[in-house]
Amino acid sequence: MNTAIRKAEKQDMPQVLELIKELAAFENEPNAVEVTVAELEREGFENNLFTCFVAEVENNIVGMALVYFRFSTWKGRTVHLEDLVVNKAYRGNGIGSELFKKVMGYARAQGVRRAEWIVLDWNKGAIAMYEKHKAIFHKDWWLVEMNEQELKKYNS
Image (tube, rainbow, N blue to C red; front, side, top):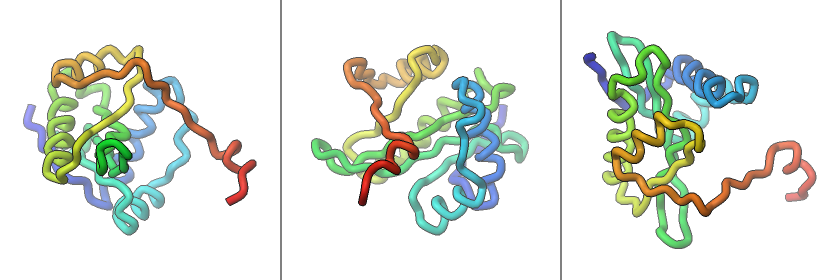
């Protein structure tokens, strides 16, 4: 399968959003996506808050990986891989690995000391791919968050 991996452009955001929604459904959260195409365009291309890579097969976007910079008090600047998703019809063809390699190459080119991401413990396909690439799993850390409703209780 002839796949091209490239940096996303603003006009790709409608297809990127469809992949985000597909990922949410896969993760049993089909109604959780609140972000819009306009937000993706603004935050990614006007405010430069993230970088997105897309996988194309025959001029159709079939996968994407979205990353952004974070700062670690231990390591300094890091890259966080927020999402990596390949359309269900195209999984199992190495496209996820190609996107992953692109992200890791980007992280290396940016001179960061670490790339990090989160994977659901039941996502066996993703776990197997990350193991193949020699990723380190930290099973003693918990993901903790505060949602928008809870944040409203705090003053700035």
